[in-house]
Length: 128
Length: 242
Image (cartoon, rainbow over all chains, first blue to last red; front, side):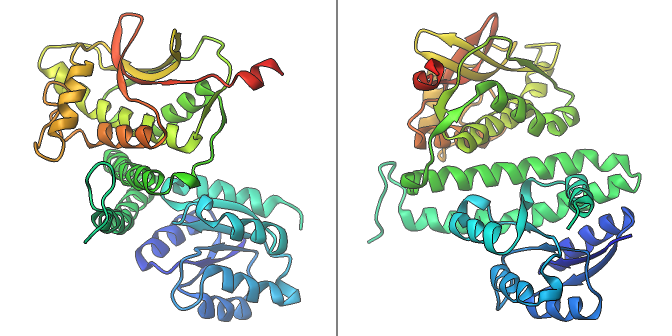
């Protein structure tokens, strides 16, 4: 069972994704924003982070910079699951890939729950 | 005064419609994923709701893409694209909707054609929008006695103008004249393509908008004995020589 930190500002979507991931055998912590996500990771170290880039107050990218600044969290896989197409984040996406250790970008409107679950499974099986 | 595009629609209105479309994507996403979650919990009757919500979400998403490509053509990355692979992915995206409407999808990608030059995401979005509109239209046509087997073919073939990618059915309601008339009636009539679909045909016009932004045409086309709509793509000769 893996501990997943789900950073998702929309409450309905967060609950739906959380139920699906819980059904797949994972334990899920929901954080609606960047600060809540940092607090949640402090409370229980996640095995994987699922991150929406459009957050309130701080963007997902700002969260990533802060998250990766802590040495103990640098090897935790982060999966972007965003309503913004990767193409609109071309520069940021390259920065994320290279500097922030993010390999997977899922475009939320085109990603089913089963695709999300299988991607999470794949990410968790990759050795750090 | 608001600036105007070639089509006559003020850019300000386009931007407002864009933000409305973006806003509507969230509730549709919520419905689609909640229905999927219900399906996973054994409520199989939610499959049609999920397929419909996902289809509406794709339509909005494709509309947004079409307008963005039209407003910011410099953002368009033309690349070498395999038509067969785009049609295959289109079939995957339309599969759930087709099942919920009792339409069988058939891929006709047997011909070995080289790559074409296109904006892959745009081409696929156009074909998905077109396909969704035709899937929704086919049962009504069958009920009117114009066809018994609900089957939509995703096909490619070579023509003297280039490589054609399109969607075809055993229906004769599609013609360039009907399409032209539909374009003129679009936004003035609730049913601009009334001999083809009982709906507003938005998917067809979204496909038309995306293809236009890519400097391509949506036109009536034949594939063997079938009738449909498609676009002509230009082969990438450079890659074919390699």
